Length: 502
Image (cartoon, rainbow, N blue to C red; front, side):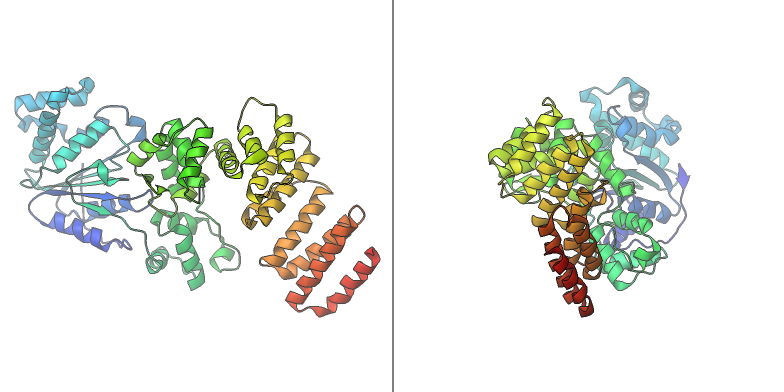
């Protein structure tokens, strides 16, 4: 229990919620508010704002803890423990019931309303001398018994000088209490938030960070904390996602860890299914021995929504963060299931077979490699070759398969995946030379034609003895890169090398 003093802080994009908090705290009568939104939306910051605004009020704070979610009334005990001595003002029956329940003896079903009345009476006794503010964060993460009791109390405060503020991921946690959904911040609000924290990004960098964060205050904070000086100046590429060791990733990880294992697998499949095709998700689930009904706990937790059109996520970053925090083995298995579902034919069967833990690795690798021949789905082929590389014991052969997977990803229109595969490649020639050919091609087509000239010329020299045709193709592309950069004097060098190869 503590007494609060007035501290004015700016919460960007939360003017309406801050106004609602001030109105509640400035009036004589009591009431409650619920703030709900996805992880990282700034719910905890609003509770901190309320505690700082609550001049002259006694403040009780609580929070739902995943570790105590199976302990009935654990959350209620933590919230009320500082003021339990005030129970001497309660009627004897209420005092005994409250003490018994908080002592761990449980509460019979027919006494639950009486318990809520006892909690209300205790809060009234504490507020007899000065108004009271109770804040409970992450109500839906803690035990259900505490959440139900506090919801009953929150609906019965009008004649008491007691304010209760609750936060949750989903609004369904508390019915009958005025609720505010926390929207994503817009680009101007994101820029202002960065400025408030001492950063002075250029307009393009600020706009890019706003897009990457999806308007999530936590994601924006995590991104800002991970940038290098060159990235702040716009001289180096920004990260593609918020860091996996940041606060937002930790929040998603905690919520996913609370779900049953089948639900986590289904949530990951839904997050990876960018097309949001219900049929694809159902077929992939069936291949894994799952059903879409396994999504129910995730929907109750506010992580996603299901409907006739498929699965939707409440925040643009949800898919990204769910896949970012997933264990590598789970992520790989989900990718293979979806790829196998979409591919069909021999490649689809091989991909689905590759999720089996029983088949020998060398057999699976050979099956996947063979199934790629003639397959038209380059994305599925990339997944198959990537998995074949992981299953291959010989480092040289694994490197060759990795380069082949990167080329399939490139031709499927996924340069980020192709770059990622090549980035972690550690191999001697000829796999490294093949990788340089692909790197040069991507530099030419994407964003660095000047760098492509040097890369392609070096790769042409490296592969020429074993593959003259690929060497000539690399020289042709080097010439194209020279044309793009305007360095026409180097045409003579390319022509000389081509003549030597012919």
